[in-house]
Image (cartoon, rainbow, N blue to C red; front, side, top):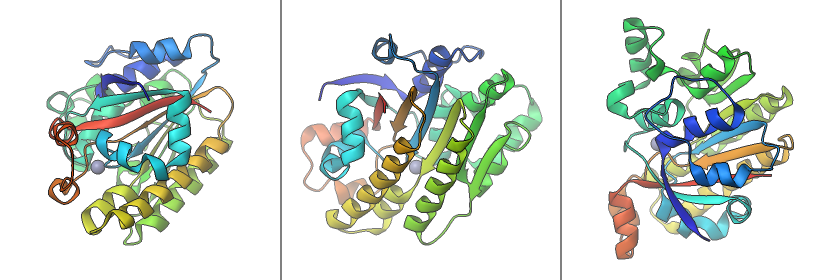
Length: 271
Ligand SMILES: [Zn+2]
């Protein structure tokens, strides 16, 4: 698989360009390889799925058990994608806004409210879903309840799932809501799957981690199957895997370097 390079802050401006969603141009830039890939294809809708902790090297290792994602990568474009943060909240805010954490200043879910209170129209706080909604398009988000609440009054459709000890069940619920959201034919949908991250913290063996990867992949497959034709998918990690020491034990020099540089996998493709 040929691999290109980009940054997670480039995802939002890429979607903006492909779907013609007007937005104040952020720090990120449209990804030329995605533009080239979609040329001549009817990409009218976009689905972003954040697979928590899907580092680039981790994806390469787990690829054999992630058949649906592997197939998307084979037909689409694979990137080594630089994430600007090692924690979930700032990393996801960068994916959604196209700005670096020091620009959007969202380091926790609560920060969204703090920063908005200072300036409700600050473009650096606005997700690509909100830009789409403002432009009269249909935007949807399926994430953890607290994060979902932050979309209240900002987009019309959002689905929240309460955090759970049973993370496989949590991801199942997220997927069910995602399928439900897709029935409304959104122009843009954002989804966050968390099982891989939770397992990376708590599991001790690759066998257990593979179990989570397989579950994530099945959920991805279900979203793919329920999407309209002409949908472009952006499947990406938010940061490299936590618990690096545990998972890097038998890593190659390149894997260690990818981890240190906080490179995540980004797969852009159509189903
Ligand atoms: Zn995360």
